[in-house]
Amino acid sequence: MAEDTAPKAAKKKAVVKVKKPSALKRNLQSEKKRLRNRSYRASVLTSIRAFESSLNQKEAPEAIKTKLNTIYSLMDKGVKKGVYKPQKAARTKARLTARTSK
Image (spheres, rainbow, N blue to C red):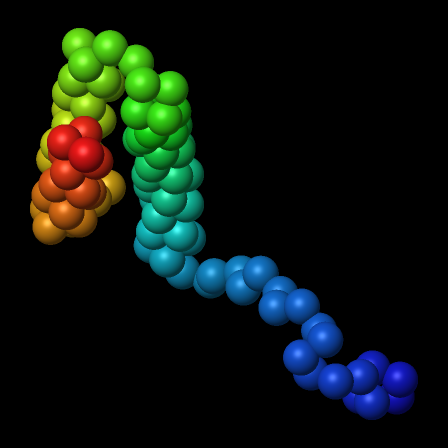
């Protein structure tokens, strides 16, 4: 009876067990893909942070250009792998390029 009086929002959503093997396989595949994409996005964000710190520290233009090219490469590979949509990559690259000219 005590469980019935507890608010439903306070209860955590239980992990749903699937019954069909195809649904189980799809869940496993999507989880692997999610973790792979998350790791890839983290590496891109790390390289963007390194680029921004080099801008703030007024490093040599060659070093900044090298870091920008690395980000371009990572973003393009991310589009190819399906991690990023093409317009997101283009927008990000354009914004970072605009920051170098300031």
